[in-house]
Length: 123
Image 1 (cartoon, one colour):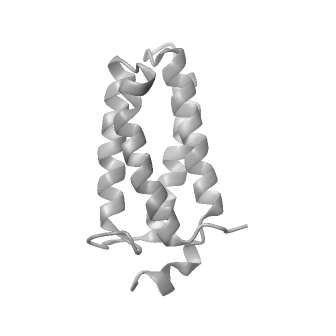
Image 2: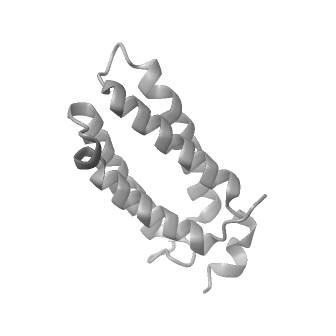
């Protein structure tokens, strides 16, 4: 069921940026885990600002493309910290945080009404 409008999706995106930026402090992420959180915060902020939806400021990226990037990142975040555990040290907290955050991205993707884009991008 598509219960999230593009406007609500935008609010969630901005909250996600803040959560990612604060994650190293709040969860004690260090090293690669902290750097990844800051990088994801920056990329997510840029994507949100550039998305063609009500809370996008420049509106260059179609909401459907934004959603495609989010589902790819979401699935990657669920799997990669575990799959790369022997290569990169995310730590237990980092693996749990990124898997959880990836799960949230997937849930938001599943719940967002991307068809409403055409009606609300003008708002």
